[in-house]
Picture 1 (tube, rainbow over the protein chains, first blue to last red):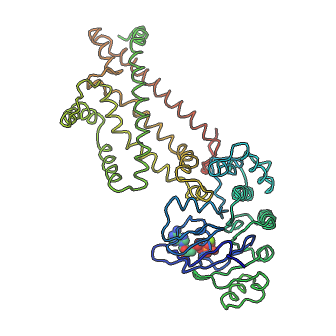
Picture 2 (cartoon, rainbow over the protein chains, first blue to last red):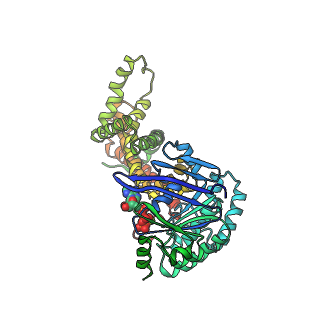
Picture 3 (cartoon, each protein chain N blue to C red):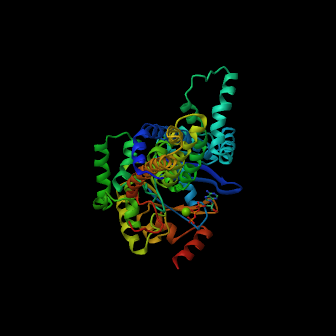
Length: 248
Length: 235
Ligand SMILES: Nc1ncnc2c1ncn2[C@@H]1O[C@H](COP(=O)(O)OP(=O)(O)OP(=O)(O)O)[C@@H](O)[C@H]1O
Ligand SMILES: [Mg+2]
């Protein structure tokens, strides 16, 4: 086997005096659907944000495809450019409030990828159809439900055809009756072969869609494995404890 | 004795001055706003030295009566500029008026824009970054359009204050509406004070109502975003 598609090495991130990531290594193959799980406050969100460079790690390196960055010495320009390898789906959607659903999805295509308005609209419509949002394209975010906002958020992230799509608890802010719909859409996307890293507490869902499950605790990756293996036979004591707690 | 027909007579006499006042207001508001944007950015980013300078500037103008700023611009500034070799003898009164206005309103408006900018959720910045927008694109396409609707009511107040500040111009010999009224009164040997001042009041009222109408229009445009999550007012 050659080099992994995504190679994360020795990522350190602190906020003030609190060290949150204490040296994280992670390999992701092309087309992998990786689930990150672990107790609250262990740095799952922080890790995703580091990969998208919304946070800037003090140390470590990230490779995506054929691009590598050393996090210690990053110019602003290099950050913006490397960030374009990934897109992010946020827990609280973060749709642009001054733009319609369609404009939200078109924005990156026009401003970042410099596509014509017509082409951008076509691509955006395709993605919006995939997430069943074609009849809400002209609504502003304040006019639609959380589930609809999140589906638009997923379309916005997909439209740019990033090398990796990052999802941070995409359903945890949703009303229970809306969760299923969004999970179904993520499941469909996972099948398309896109590389995906997702933080979720929906364990049955994670087990079904993942090719790889990663358990984090205390700023480290404790254990990595295939979903059946990790859920049935966790090797590490901490993983066992965590699974016991959330399965009951 | 009050004679209504004199108001009708004075009204067209003051029209030219009225138009001049409008231009002073427009010029002052636009230049101040254009400068307020970078000042706000400097203060938000806390750029060393210039941001401290801007804070002192803001605190200074907040404490100053408008007439003092006008006098400083008109009576003190030329001497200072003369020392560095700039001759102001052929500058018009209007130039000094604009200098005084902008000196006051640029930092003042920056203090309207700053909290409005900060009221935009951090998630909006992050979402923009996450799809690869540059800082500048984020500002122009996402943040500024959400900042403006928040700032508009206070910007409207600032514009109305500007309108009223024009009534100080006659103190440095520029003929504003007040100055024109005094000229008309002098012409009638002091007999038509009431009518002249009433005409001035009507013009100021028209100007203010006009400013409010323009800002209302603008606010209406931004209503479509439905940014407000507070109580819904009956429309
Ligand atoms: N911007 C920040 N400033 C200071 N501390 C932060 C910041 N962001 C995160 N932290 C801290 O870093 C730690 C890890 O946070 P993170 O959000 O990554 O955890 P998480 O694993 O995603 O938890 P959860 O499951 O609750 O979402 C927490 O202790 C948190 O308080
Ligand atoms: Mg989190």
